[in-house]
Image (cartoon, rainbow, N blue to C red; front, side):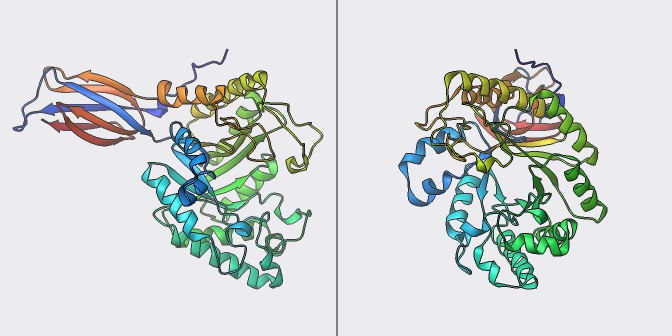
Length: 404
C-alpha cells in the first residue's frame, strides 16, 4: 500500500474572499464556486506526438493529444540539432513554433530540449574547426532562445555534460569543443549566451548521471557564476525502479544547492525489465518488448510512490515522464497509454492524483462579514459568485474582493 501521508502543505495556499454589493457592503450567505483550472506544479510529459497532430492534421494523433491534455500541463518539445537543422541554415522552425503556440494556447507550459548536446548533433558541424563550431553553437542558442521567446521560455541548455568530454561512441563537434574548453567552461559559455538572449528564461542543466560527479560539476558551475535556474535529473528506469530509498538519497544530495529540482526524463517499464548488465540503455535492442498486465500494475504502483515522494519535496517543481505512449523510445513499454492508445493503470492513477486528490473544486459560503476562506492547491482558478466570474492565480495567501 502506497503511503499518502507525506506533507504537501507547501503545495497549498489559503485563499480569502470578500463578497460585496456594488456599494461595497458585505453580503452574507453567498455561495462561492472555487474551480481549479491548472496546477502551478509542472506535471509534464514528452510532447513529441503533438508535432504531427498540429502540423499535418494527423487524426490518428488526436486521441493521443486529447488524452495527454487531461493529465499534463507541461510538455517537452525536441530541438535535437541534427534533426531540427539537418541541413545548415534550414531549421525546422515553423513546425516547432506552430506546435509550441498550440500548446501555449491550451494552457501548457513548453520546454525546449536541448540547445547543446553531443548526441544527435548536426553532422555538418564536423567540417569546421573548434572556434567556428563554438561560434555556430552560440548562434544557434541566439536563434532559438530569441526566436521562441514568449512561447518557449524554458530550456534544457546543455545535456549530459558529465560524460560529454569522454564520449567515444562516435566523433562529434560538441565533444570536441567540450574537450577544449572543459566541462565548466562550456557550460558557462552556453548558459551565459542563453541568459543574455532571454534573462527571464528558466535555464536547466540536465544529466542522467546522479553520482558525485554531477554534484561536483554543479558546484563548479555555481562557483563560477553560471546562471542555472534549476537542476535537471533524468531517471530512465528501464532496469528497474529506483525505489524510495534511492529516490530520497538523490534528493538529499542535490537539495543542498538550494536550487529548484526538475525530474526531466522519467521512464518506468510495464513489461520485462532490461538486464542489469547493459551499460548504455541504447544498446538493448529487442524485436518485441510488450507490456504485460502484471507489469502495468507494478508500473502504476511505482509511479504513484515516485510522484508522491517528489510532490512532497519543497524544491521539486516539475516531473516529466518521457514516453506518453508505449514504444516511443527503445521500443519500451514505458508509456501511460498502450500502442493502441488505450490507457494503462498508470494513466488512471496519475489522472486521479493530479485532478482529484491534488485538485481543488469546491463551494464555500460567506459569513456575516461577507468573508469565506478555502485551502487550495497552488494554481489557476475560476471563482464564480451569482454568475460573476473572476480568474485568479493562487500561489500565495491573498484576499480577493468580488462585487456582485
